[in-house]
Each structure stands twice: as structure tokens, then as C-alpha cells.
Image 1 (cartoon, rainbow, N blue to C red):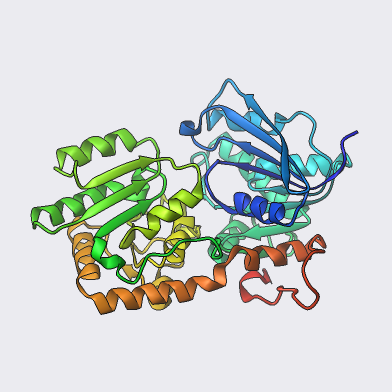
Image 2 (image 1 turned 90 degrees about the horizontal axis):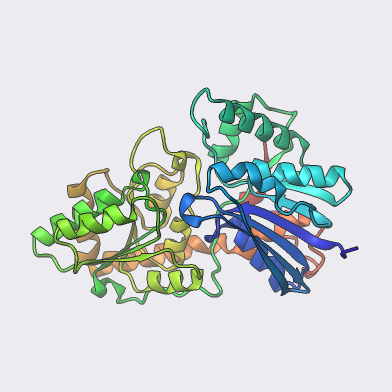
Length: 397
């Protein structure tokens, strides 16, 4: 019989996020754990990766292929692996992954189960569909049955409670925002403005507004302003965006990097930029209204001034405290904000300093330690360093 591991982490997606941060945090402490990573988007293919770590070191990695791609493959996720590992704590980063953990707990293969909700979408698979109804029922059950529930934002927590009609019947939700590894991240230099380089990081889908960014860059190019841009990420629009950039005369301006597997390489690219953009398309159809986008923390950790539309719930806080600027979802407005943000050296450096000061509270170890404290797993932290007093990780109703 296999020895019991400290934790199992079940999630969808191979990019950087809370599941990967928790994995790295536990491995740095020399824990034994199992990670179960399923594909999230069609671009991620059919790989399901199960990795076993003992005393912080990888000892086994097994790849399972399914006949389906996301979203159809989601139905197969709970079957991989067929026998769940024996663990002290099961972290499920969506209702399906969490439901698998609840089954493992019932079978005596997991002592505690955590639902870590990384997003909230009012109608996950379309309004009124059977798939959405089933998803909601599972999500609601998980909210009531788990030992601990984690949300990324207070906005998502409140929306989920309203959606499911939950109150005292649910497990208290602890709001733990997205973080960054501040001890390793590379920051842009104080003269980074001189590079005049714009950067976008994220999924290449219409709601992210990359088409509007290209239009803004075309406006700047038309005014003969020196500018370059990096687009980091992939998605269903990647080929279209590459073609659009060429048609707009931006072939020598915009570099498309595709998906970058190692987030440390992403961090280095961000540090070479001058200004970062998050031009989310406005509209109620985007779950970003409830989210804490990880790229914003990555931008801040790199010390980059940010331009973003008024979509994420923390947009105004970033503008007030972190040197960000809220801009209209309009090519001319974005172009003007980019130009203005690079023209004043003093203003750019003040925004850089504000970003670096603000992001200090989002160091991943600071955010993750209280979660493990609540599960009585954090036996490696020094006495007196409980960390549970952080206002950003307090339980809330």
C-alpha cells in the first residue's frame, strides 16, 4: 500500500496559478504530495498529468491521454487516476476536482477536503443548460461539504452565495487573492521606460481585448511613435491576431511568444517591458468582473505601470494605490494612455515604485501559510509566525 502523502492538488490548466503556487510552496518545505493536472482549454490538448513527489522531490510522472479535449474532457477528469491517492488534505481547484476529493474522503483516502474556487461564472455552460444546472448543484454541495473553502475575491464569494442561495449552511469562505513569488521575481529597472515596450500576458480570447490593443498600437505607429510590444500567451485567437498585426503594419512591432511553460521566463520578459496592459472588453459576459487576474499581480511584481479597463473588481484599488490607470475600452484612449505613461520619466518612476510597494502584501508564502494553518498542516513555521491575522485571509460570510 502506498504511503500517505501530505496533500493532493487537483486542478485544470498547466499555466501559473494558485494550484501551482501551492505545489511550489509545499515542495519548498520538503512535503510529499501528488498533483493531478487536467487540460483546461482545447489548446492544452488531451494530456492529464499525475505527478508524485516525496520529500519535495519528483519521483514519478505519469501522463494519461483522453479521447476528448476540453470542455468535453471535463467529464473524464474525475476518473484520472482511477484510484485517488491517500492524503491528509485534498485541494480541489474546481467543483469536479473537489467532488473527487469528497469521494476520497468518504472512502477514507483523504482526511480533509478544500474547495479552492479560482473563478466564478454565473452560467458556466450557458444559461438554462443541463450542464450548468449540474455544475451548480455540485458547486453548491462542495461549498457545504468541504472542510475549508477558499475564494479569490470577496466579489466572487458574495456572488457564489447568492447564486446558490447559501448562507450559514455553507463552509466559511476565506478570501485569498492571487499572489507572486517576490523572492525570485525580476523587476524592471528604474530606466525601464526608455525601452518603450508594451507587454500583454494572458489567454488570447476576445474578452481579453488584445484586438483593441493592436488597434491602439496601430494608432501609435501611425503617429510615428517608437513603440514595441510583446504578447505572451496562446488561445483560439492567436493565428487571427498574428494575421491582424501584419495587416495593421505591426509585423516589426509586435512579437507573439505563444505559451511560455516556465513562469520564470515570463517574469524575465515582463521585467524587460516598460508598461503592461489589461484591456478587458466591457460587458457582463466576462467572469473577470468576479476574478483576481493573476497577470495583474505578475505585472505589479515586475514593477510595471498598468493600463486596464474598469472590469476587474480591484481596478479602482490598483489605480488608487498601485500606480495603475483605468482607461476606456477604445483604441485611441489606450494609445493616449500608453504615450502619456511613457512620456514623463518622473511619473513613470513613481508608478513603478507604487506597484512594487503595493505588491509586497501578495507574496505567496504570506498568502498560503494561513490556509495551511487552518488545516493544522503547517508544522514547519517558526513559533509566533502564525500569519493568520492578515486581513486578506480572514474568513468571511
